[in-house]
Length: 140
Image (cartoon, rainbow, N blue to C red; front, side, top):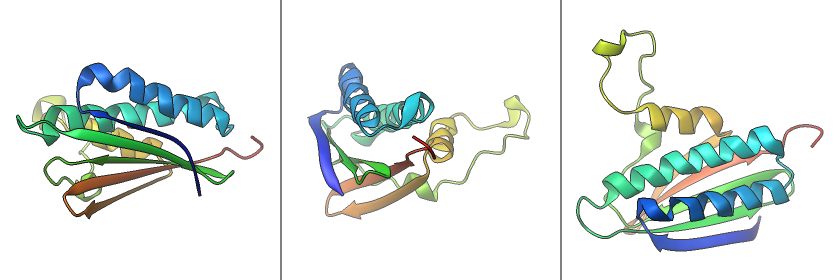
């Protein structure tokens, strides 16, 4: 896969629009179409927001986002130097439970898993690396 975009920035919510713009441009450039581009934007928004809110626990954290493509798929890698967190290990929420019986949180992780074609996590040294993959729709 070839690298098509990269952004490194402090994990602050005010930087979220920059991350979304990078993946949006990459998805459009790779011909993912409006619906799949929306999925990329949603997944990245949820992942980056979670990093900004929870990864540092009061300590500054940085995020490095990389977009890779091969003509069939766009992969977005989001690396941060926050506390370890493997979202792929989290169980999906019970959507059949009554709202008042459900724990708070977890829907963002669920959305990431549902809108991405593949989600992978690994801990590389002191960094979390989340890889989100999005296949180009047939006929695109």
